[in-house]
Amino acid sequence: MAALGKAAARWAPGLWRRAVRAAVWLGGRRFASGGAQSPPTFGLLLDIDGVLVRGHQVIPAAQEAFRWLLDPQGQLRVPVVFVTNAGNISQCTKAEELSAQLGFQVEPDQVILSHSPMKLFSQHHDRRMLVSGQGPLVENARVLGFKHLVTVDELRAAFPVLDMVDLQRRPKTTPLPRNDFPAIEGVLLLGEPVRWETSLQLITDVLLSDGNPGTGLATAPYPHLPVLASNTDLLWMAEAKMPRFGHGTFLLCLEAIYRKLTGRELHYTGLTGKPSLLTYRFAEGLLARQAAQRGWAAPIRSLYAVGDNPMSDVYGANLFHQHLQTQQEGAARSCASILVCTGVYGPQAPGPPVPAPGSEGSPFHGHRDFGFRPELLQAAHVVSDLHEAVRLVLRKEGWAL
Image (cartoon, rainbow, N blue to C red; front, side, top):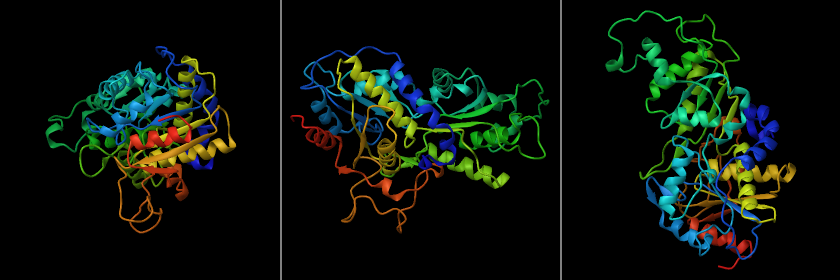
């Protein structure tokens, strides 16, 4: 449990069973039966960006891979969940996108966004939360269970003098101070925003003012208000030749600013998304639910997590595998990490497939709260693409190709 880090260790233990129950309970259309040569005892956790697609372009090998996974009726032969650290989209929209891209029906409850496990943080759902990100921000937060929300734009409109970086957006006159704005009781970070400088400034204002950014305090309160964040990926892969900044980069900036101003560390009440153990337990529950809906009575014992990012995908799968060796709340007994070369990670010169962490030229890209355990960056298998990954899994499980 120490690998969860200082923040996660305080909240994760009490959520495991709730994660499984919630994932099994979540509504959705039943899957049609039939197709598999034998009831599967394994399931797949597939990353999206860098494994299935790059930007808006489907990776051809991913389409080939699903020829092995679909039966003649277009139904999956094994349970599959799509586990992404994206969060600036709705679950339904992501399922629709995947359906169009992959050529078969993907249900919303087969998609786990980075913030999906925040449904379990019910003790914070009634708080008045400042929410940061983009896309259907308020809709996503409400789906997670949060009832009282204030966006960064709404906060800026209420206190226009707080946002002073962009000269074109500065107020031309000084507005009267407001004393009718209810206090903010927590911060909800669902994904990287568009205007980083505005979000960084206003989130910091909320934390330093104990939720009353229109006022000033002589001393910043500590502990500060609850902060829930999803997706700690430093980088992600789109159409560009080099990886792009992810939400983890935004969090890094926020943490550095808070530390510089206060001399203290920013504390997260909860972190979700890969490599969080809670995300993998949540995914396990969805796989079990799919198997039950298809009438596959055999428990799902073996999980295979396919991803392109050593720090989020490989690290998280290996962390979960180690957890399963000592804690067995569900049916799963193993989680094998499979690293593909179509995204953040790519083929390198002769040598080890993943450079030894700590060596020159191999900085640690993970989030501070998940610790640094070099052995967890080593994938169980390194393959060229998803097509090769699926063939590997089917061979290991003794299924005909």
